[in-house]
Image (cartoon, rainbow, N blue to C red; front, top):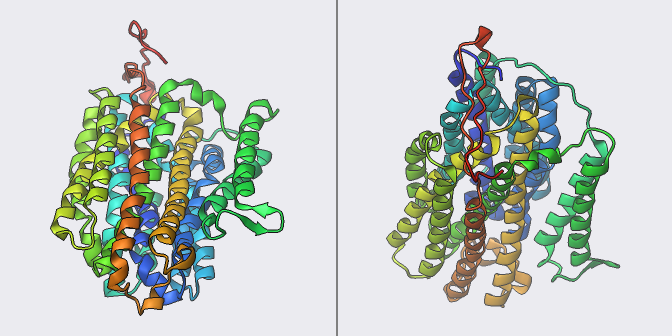
Length: 506
């Protein structure tokens, strides 16, 4: 551990950039209908604006976490921040959907350089008995950003145009860069070799899996070209990912994915749980935004304001949750949060109708705010509690990778499900594809019922995944007592390792 006298300014500097990159995970959802109109594209193409970002974000996280250990988290964070900010400007200048997707890929690569460094620095500069509060801040930023994104996006899209959801990152990125340069310490580095074969296998497997899922409905789950089919892509992706795991075990060099980390029961379960959270949070907003704007005719700002209860309640309660995590078994907080997340989404699905009193839809939004406040800090604290310093980057890279894998699969799956439900409920839209300019930017009234049904049914998917998350966290082991930090020389921790309580599992 490398404690510093004033760790909080360093943490605030890092979470400013972290907040920005997480906002870009969800800010696009509220702008999707306007991007469809402005760039004359369809639902599946515009969803790739999000999926390409998430995929480019997720795939390199394992190696960028290791790069932070090798070259220093501060250097990697600043390099990623510059890349992300420049790519944001490129996104705003894009004139067609292909260029926008390409720029989002570069943006995702910048985010991948930044993200593991935030958790790694927390793990290394905060003692274990104060890490819950630090992770509470980190978790509240993660939770609030996913909810603030659509609200901020709506205001920018209505006031200035969809391009400004990307241009806004320029001033934020500049401020975040100079704050990190000033306050984030240059921590010691650890030598690592890099598993090139593992990088190739993980990247290829993820791409095949996500492309197959998202494009399935486009090709009616059949042939793409020649002998190549949607299902062959999905199966190939799973086989390649399985080969990646085997390679991590039998490869001679240092593995990209340290499988030894998963010997810690709570680390393994926290990674599984955050995958369900990433899936749910990423996929739930898309059906709601399309319903609000296309069926109810709300502006982007108005549709985003329907999510305000989530952002306000989550932001207010998340720091409180962070403090509780150091005193209460995290699994009870996380299980309650995930259960509320599922209930809120089931409630949304039951309420959605073309003529429902729109004020009623603020109630499940408030439930989701309570849910988010209880999810992020308990899971991140459980994942990082027992990480040794030399594996802080690797552990945070794994944790953020699994979260982003969940987000990528959520984005791809909700796209496929929405297309499938539209194909079933809107036979007037062959293949489930729809361009808003086909109807002059509006959906005819006779299609409202079918479109609403498709969105309502789509929400059942993230609700079900959240329930899986509840089951996962219920198997968390009771946390071990934290190491105590003494007044040793130069702030060296005086480690106290009490024996596990009777019956305590790993």
